[in-house]
Image 1 (cartoon, helix red, strand yellow):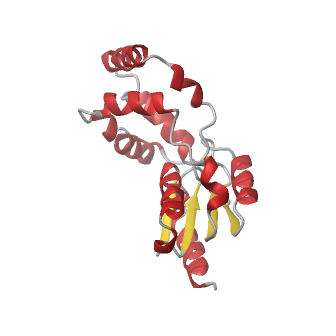
Image 2 (cartoon, one colour):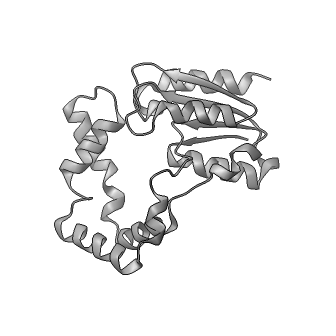
Amino acid sequence: MLLVGPSLGAAVALDFAVNHPDAVEKLVLLDASVYSEGTSNMTTLPKAVAYAGVFLMKQVYLLKSVPLRLYATYLAFNGLPFDTCLDWSNVGRLHCLLPWWEDATVAFMNSGGYNVSSQIEQVKHKTLIIWGEEDQIISNKLAVKLHCELPNAIIRQVPDCGHIPHVEKPSVVANLIVEFSQDD
């Protein structure tokens, strides 16, 4: 199969490819969140403190708030009109409204994030790395780092595009994936 993973989904795809190498023929990673820099210091955070923070956020709805989600959407996309930004912000906060969200947030904080960086060099599959040139969420430097660490990777930058190239420039991304899938 051709396995595609955007953002944190790229970490899941990479993890799957390492643990089930025969199931994957090629890998496509879009603005991959495969390094957990900056989150590992949360592993020492006592669970009670983490829950207190999430509870406080729950009371003021900070992480669920429209202004914060608008800002996150602004960072994720490049030059999005306000009405579209508002729509994507509402979609982006849906998971925060689920009843188990607080427990999942604390578990993620205490785990130090989904860190697959130790698995990167184990990936032997042909890999296409696609990255939005204007990504404000994950630095392009990490795209270059990932490209250097993956032995069979090629990298393609998408101009005038932020963190979600498959949404911002779907035809460009689709063409890159089709071309990659047909290349032997």
